[in-house]
Length: 87
Image 1 (cartoon, one colour):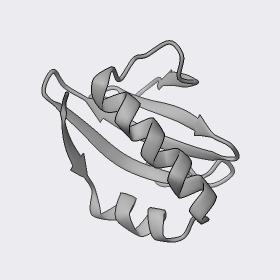
Image 2 (cartoon, rainbow, N blue to C red):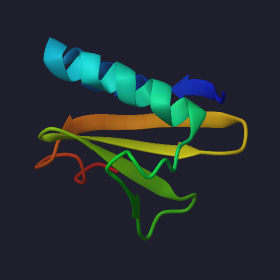
Image 3 (cartoon, one colour):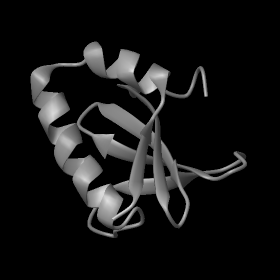
Image 4 (tube, one colour):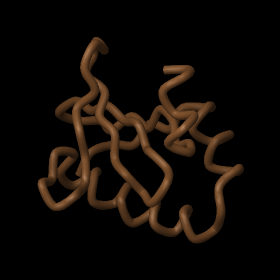
């Protein structure tokens, strides 16, 4: 299982979303820590970012993350209309 690094911006974003989405997010994070490219998760690689960023759909929200062999970094979680503005 990978170590987890949560960015300050992710923490701010998380406070703004509903409890239902937060509980779904917790489950997704557990699965991502085990396997960040799990095919059962609706994830997609974002192009044009170095290091590579990935996104996961959680209802109308998107969770943006990156990973290495030992660490999972959570960057942002926002509504789909806003997520790509400040990456």
